[in-house]
Image 1 (cartoon, rainbow over the protein chains, first blue to last red):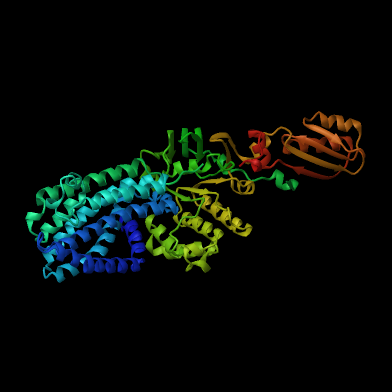
Image 2: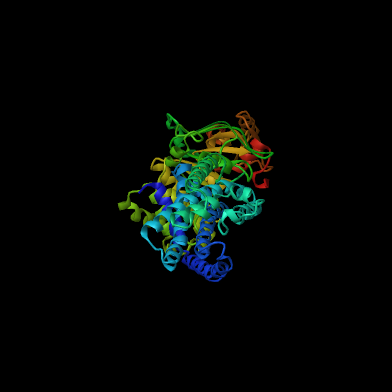
Length: 254
Length: 335
């Protein structure tokens, strides 16, 4: 088997050994949409029809963000538990190493997102294979972009975990809170919307809603959304490949 | 260290005398800086194919930094490093294909078992799947890890984790094998096992670099020793030559059956070295550079003078003495 796949399989096996976390993530998702989703839906139903569905997709997109952040955290844990030097000494290119991390990220995202997606589509009576596949592709692209951002940033943590945590908290505040994950862009106050358009989650969430047939009047242009999500994925993965190759060093030793 | 006369004269020839044609490792003006600290300062260093090169130096001397650069984990600040002719910066993946490293700190996912860690390592290095399990089992048994094969990595003792680290390289049999302090935290019995396996690996054709600050380890393993101090190479040679380089380093003590004549003492003083006699006149102590040259001359002179020798003891300098001689500091005193 290809060495990149062996390395990815190693990471995925570790992932699958943590089944409790998946059950907790699904339970949390269910609780969130059952309580907040249905309540918010009643509150805003006059302004946004079918807000429950809008909210559920937004929550899935945030899960994609969290899974992408997990990849960066995974890399940082490898570094601090001493495994990163070992991985960097294995006969795979730095690009291959990054690809293995990305495969881990995709597996993590799909496991966390697929059951909620199927559950929500079934619940709203809109479960089709075509819809589910396109929604997954959209979230997959978004997940790659987030993974790229997180891996690019994770090298900060090799110097200080505290700085990385602070940076991640700030990034999360900006990317998640100012995105259209929970609110349509057309309802955003004018002083928020300029920030919102810089969040990749804005494009990922609206693209996913579009492929699932949500009212386009509440969404961004799907072509623009698809272009931005693809560009972010390609751009940040290229950047992280460069960073992994040029910047990340496994250990400092005297 | 006092050793028997016979052992002294029949030291095995270092393998490096076999005129290697290619450097397995070569660094040129290699430097590595961390912030304001220079870990390596213009290091020129070579390792011949098929030898065990021991890098001896205290903590902070740059040993681990050098090894990390050779296995492409760290990038040099300046200078070049090549492994079997491949530049570590330009073609890191190819370098990683031909080398294996046992890290100073054992590396493993805390919830994995030793056997699965080795299986993963073997698969990454394309070990024949048909032979993989047998090789892993044999290596684990050799290193007394077989009983612990189903323990989690986090439950292994420090010594077991270090042996597992060694096992990775042994099953891999790389062209260049690097061991960073391979027996720290390992008991004496375990040390011997690891040392013997490292020598066996050399005999199977691997070139080996061992970094250590343990003199015994260096003495047991080294074909050649490089002394590293404050990021620079102080000296590099075989252990006998390093010891011989210390003027008056060998101490020869001779017991005669009867007190010897002044004439014999004068003639022994003429052989070189510093000779002193006991007050009774039947015990001689000489500080010489090469006992193996001096002793035959001494025995001839004694025979001519009619003095009968009862016993000869030779004490040669240790690598600690060598380190002290070349750096002006004792190895044990370093931080």
